[in-house]
Image (cartoon, rainbow, N blue to C red; front, side):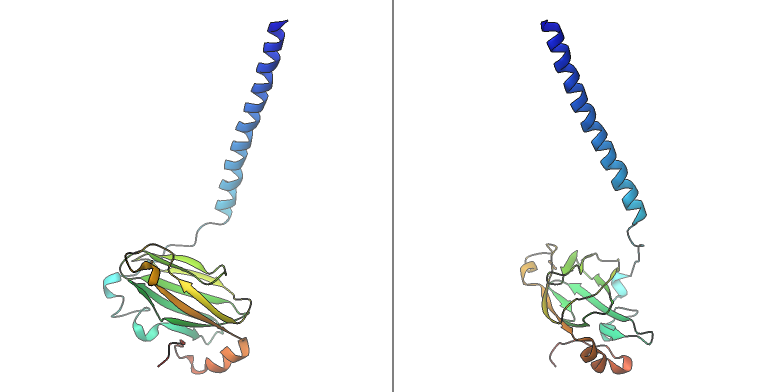
Length: 180
Ligand code: CUA
């Protein structure tokens, strides 16, 4: 009698443990397949030592530009302890591509409560495309601990109505909302 009770208890545990193992394997398979269906974007590198002298991230090329193809691209650089430009202009309701890198340490940023969020690693170009639902001003803090000035490192993002943005963006010039 005691033996059959023990056997039944043993069998129940075997079922529970078996179910846990099946669930864990299923999680591994699902996340593995999901990630290979959504691979991280390709790696793009940039020479940190020549960043400010030539190429895409020279100071005069930073900021927001409306290309001839109608695409909006924001280029920015992070360094201890600021972003360049300090105030970024983007349109609402239009795709905006960010291209950014860091000069000295690992930084990062997130724009308000939007999904615009990336790490910035020296030597690598971080890029993503997003769109902002509503016009207004957002804060853009650095969110990777980068040194003693980390908590003072942030920029502002002005999200403009599309018409207002397009009116300002004529001529392909690099825009920002830094007061001058
Ligand atoms: Cu830059 Cu924290």
